[in-house]
Amino acid sequence: MTIPTVTTERLTLRAPQLSDFDAYADFRGSDRAAFVGGPNTPGQAWQQLCALTGQWQLRGYGRWMIADKDTDEPLGVTGLHHPLEWPEAEVAWSLFAAGEGRGIAYEAALAVRTYAYETLGWSTVISCVDSKNARSLALAKRLGCTRDGQFTHEVFGTMDVWRHPSREALA
Image (cartoon, rainbow, N blue to C red; front, side):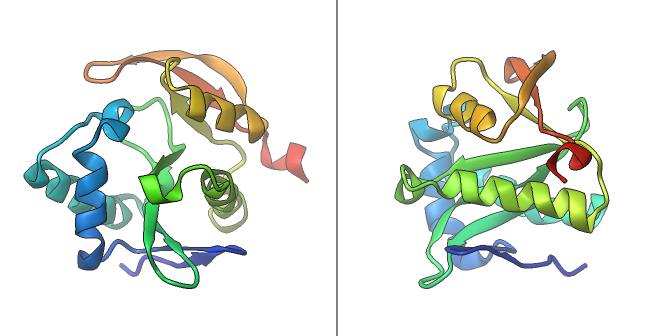
C-alpha cells in the first residue's frame, strides 16, 4: 500500500519516515502527549509510529506526518484515526512543539476532512476530544464541529464526540 501525499499552502501530509522518529519520540515522551496516552517511552513511541503506517494497510486510510512544505520538518501528526474501540473514524491531530500557535492544526485538519469527503466519499466524520483539552476543543469549534455526545474509552476516559459539518453542508 502506498500512503498518498496531500499538500496545502504550507504543509505536506506524508507517510511517516524513519527520520521523523526523534521528533515523534520527543512529542510522545512529553507532557504534550497527555491527551493521547503519553508520556511514553521511546520504545512505546516506536510502536505507535509503526501503527501510524499500519492502519493505512489495514483500513485503506490513516494518519500522516505533518511536515513543513519547504523544509520537511515534522510538525505533528494528523489524519483519519480509527481504533477498534472508537465509535467511528475521526479526524485526529497532534502537534509537536515546533508546530504550535501557527494555525497548522487547522490547515492540516481541513485537508484531512477534504480528503475524507472528496477522495474517500464519506459524508460525515467526527473528532473525539477530551473536555480538558482546551486547544483541541477550540479547534473543533473553529472547524465548525458540533458536540454529538460522548464515549468512554478504557485508557483515555470520557471524551466528547464532535461532529464535523457534513459534506453536503460544506458544499
